[in-house]
Amino acid sequence: MKPYSWALDDAYWPDVAPLMLTKGQRVEIDLVNHSMMPHPMHLHGHSFQVIAIDGRRPVHGAVRDTVLVASMGSVRIAFDANDPGRWA
Image (cartoon, rainbow, N blue to C red; front, top):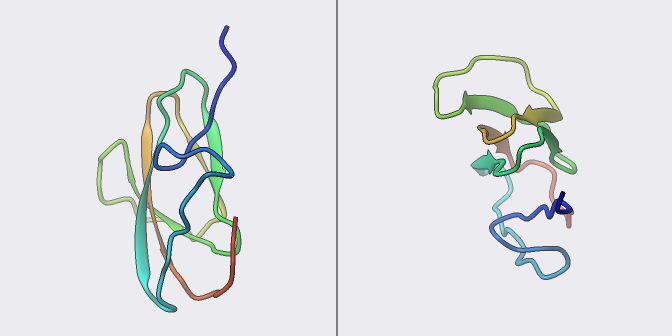
């Protein structure tokens, strides 16, 4: 079995471009898992809401800090950029 390689926007750490946001900006991000292994995802410094699972909207739920993205699945999250700084 090949080892897994995790990327964001097809970029692998440390060769990634920063996501530049304005304080207070509402941001939506699609987390897509192209592997056969479920993978937990989280943001550093921010909590978020899950707003869609596999393209099905709306999802209403609590604010959280981690979500499990199913194998071959996707999750759309939304957060407010209210904690300025450099985050991984």
